[in-house]
Amino acid sequence: MAVPTKKTRVLLIKYHEAADQQPLSKKAAEKLGIFPSLPLLGLASWVRKHGYDVKLIDLHALNLMPEEAQALVREADPDIVGLTAKTLGWPAVIEIAQMVRAVCPDATIVLGGPHLSLYPEESLTWPCFDLAVVGDGEETFLEICDRHESGSELTGIPGTVSRSKEGIVRHAPRTLSRDIDQYPMSAWDLVKLDNYNVLTLLKPFATMVTTRGCPWHCGYCSQVYSEKLRFRSPELVVDEMEFLQKTYGVKEIVMFDETFTIGKKRMRRFSEEVQRRGLNVKFNIRARVDTVDRETLTLLKQAGLRSIHMGVEAGTDRVLKIMNKQITREQTRRAFRIAREVGIETRGYFMIGYYDATPEDIEETIHFASSIGLDWASFSVATALPGTDLYTIAQERGYVEGDFWREYTVNGGGLLPQLETETFTAEQLRAYRTKAYLKFYMRPDLIRRKFSRAEGREELMEMLGGTTVLTEIVKATVLRRIPQVGLGKIATV
Image (cartoon, rainbow, N blue to C red; front, side, top):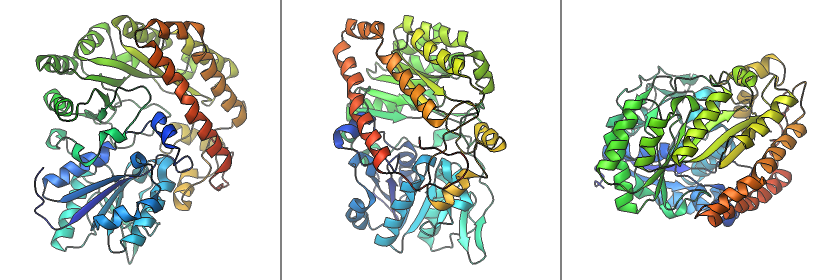
């Protein structure tokens, strides 16, 4: 690690993922899953490369609420504090920023992340934030640091929204860098990997992203930055994998790309490079069912692929078309069959209650999930997230009134919008989700299959371990509700 050459001190803070569910007990938090913040670790390595002193506090990993982190922030004595905001974590980000403002009143507090890019001006109505970064953060955040270092004004920076005497001003966008190979690997020395736990992963584990952007436009997805695909070179990806294995003893790496398996030549280069170096580290990936085939999965298995996660979402072609998912049931069945035959663990994701779905569609989705040989399945109730086609439809049909998420941003929270349509109530959708989980995980064939494996006992313990989390989340939902904003047909998720 290079010695800092500049006097500006930077502090990056990760918040709890859901303000109404944290902190859980340590036991439950470990089972629920706590991942390192890749955006902040990447940002840290980039500005540190340019001579800045950077520290990172992960409140989620440390299981601390903002008031409990005051001493850590005071000790860091930052000039610039960076926060990143996802939509569902927005109330917690405000909490943290207010704490930082109280502890370090002269610090410049900078906000970035997916939610900020959707509602930048509205986010900055909160006086605890000084600047907002829209889109990719590296170049913009570095310019903020450089201007602070030189004593220059922090207004007018491309890619930001700032506050002035005239009000909140959105400045010109910053051109996306097409070369993401220029950004160094994440600053792993700033966190302790022992603090991160996920129920189904080998430990210690780490996380990576090898691409940016997504060329698809699924109706429920709030991917907002860019549809232009940008790739890290396979050699640099494997460099980081090798570093993590040799330096920290990492046993598994989670590839958090929207779709890891884009480009067969790229997959071949990656797989061959891993094998050429003799790496002995497992990894798991996210993919679309229409981007995998036997050759690709065989190559990845040989390189160490342990688990593949694919979004199925619906069990009928009719609802898949409504979602603009651009896949079919048959493609899904085929993709998971190949993965199973190659020897890769499988997880599918399913959505309950998309608009225009019928009871028969939901029943078929539950049946389909249990019939395609998955090892794990996750079920969620459809949520109309900002920036999605689903949200636009919900507004047009009056399922929500006005711009719920704008009000959520300005008000600092609200009951999350679960769609209640002409067909389903919120309670019915939650009941379907419970039915889906029970039907999937209580199947005798699934339990027998897990017992038949060498690691069967561990897999069953993982299944049972989720009850601790579920119990605490139910208690949190009942006992600690966020005040209702009062827009449309909103129900607690």
